[in-house]
Image 1 (cartoon, one colour):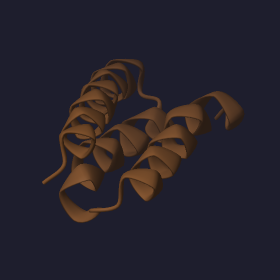
Image 2 (cartoon, rainbow, N blue to C red):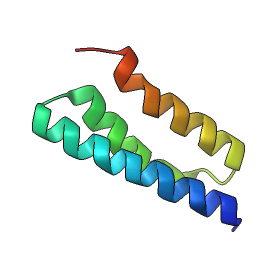
Image 3 (cartoon, rainbow, N blue to C red):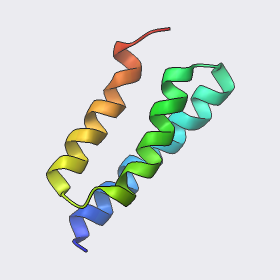
Image 4 (cartoon, one colour):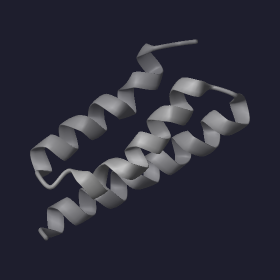
Length: 67
């Protein structure tokens, strides 16, 4: 395991936790689902570039889609 992969997983996991809590309290389903996916994604992606790209897309998605 690479150190940068571990660091990116921690960063995106913490952002996912914040989205999860925010989405649950505000009843925002896009933030809720993106938070869950951001928390789980680092367990399944072993490529740092793919993890960063997925994390950025999922991190920006709640701002682009307003429900």
